[in-house]
Image (cartoon, rainbow, N blue to C red; front, side, top):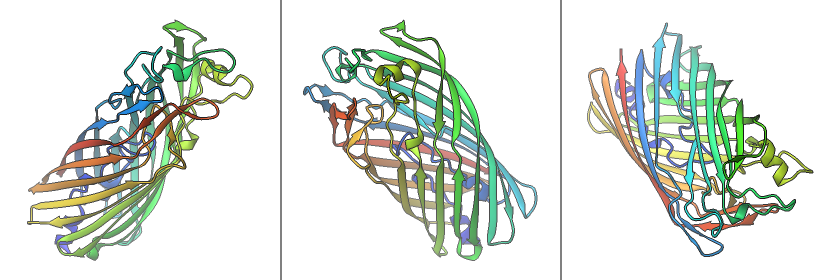
Amino acid sequence: MMKLTLLASAALFAAQAAVAGGLDRSGQPIGIIFEKGNYAELSFSSTTPSLTGVDVLTNPIANVGVSFTTLSGGLKYEFSDKFSMAIIADQPYGVDVAYGGAPGTTMLGGTAASAETFSLTAVGRYKFSDRFSAHAGLRYQTINADVTLSGLAYGPLPPGATLNTYNADMSTGDGFGFLAGAAFEIPEYAMRVALTYNSEITHQLSTLETIGGVQVAPITDTEIKSPASINLDFQTGINERTLVFGSVRYAKWSDLVISPTFFDAAVDPVNPNSSISDLEDTWSFSLGVGRKVTDNLSVSAVLGYEPTGTDDLVSPLSPTNGSWSVGLGGRYTMDNVTLSGGIRYTMVGDALPETGTPDTARASFTGNDALSLGFKVGFNF
């Protein structure tokens, strides 16, 4: 049973997200709450995407994906054999996209978006028995964003307005949410199934809107909701040295509406609530295997899949549609310290960035990918 326990906590690091559905980056993991004893960890990852295409005027679109890094960490403390708590810090969502080209001669030249989030989660777990447990907690989250809509695809609009060179600078807003879930385990087989619900979180972001650098509306608050999601994580031992693991994640991105005052009126003054974003709900799946090579060294491999949307039309701010990925990871244990590392290659699905009403394709993105590297340090105390 001890060997299975060590393998069960072996690094599933290769399963971490690289380029994911919607604006997902971390997947909101809470696996630290299932670590044995008192435990702390710190993780770092870096992703380099390649997202290229051509617009409908045959202008080539150089790589619009901006490389990004993510940091996360956590601390878990076991108060008794029944009750434990963890504090988790991560960057769950984000976007970094920038189109080259002149706004007056290309469809999307100058369009750009950057968004950063930070979450601090406190989660407690109560074990009813060796097999059944429940977990719940509170989450504090911040978000800020800056979006530029630029190029011939953004003007003129039907009422005669234009959004070419439009910018929305949204300052940091915060909000609170919750999570709740349960787990079933069979320790002697390193088997565990955990289901977690993450609530949506509402933010109010003070927004400055400009066109060509000139303010076009009073500064007002823009409401943004980060999506509700459900995570299903599972693992089971095959033998003393082999573990199969995986996950399913659903995120309700269709509820994300970003509708600043001037933008909303310019797009459709009769029927308001137009959104800068245009994202569908997403499903993400992963399946992997871990193998204990020695008492100290474990390795893992994982395959990831995200289905394509209902059609190939997507937001220019997220010019991808589904993906396949493969990751390799390893973990080395030295006394009470563990070192984990992983690499993941993601093949991004073809997509057609669109604007307008009705949706009209403005470019085509094909044959794209991303490479992610990660490292984690864990410490038992």
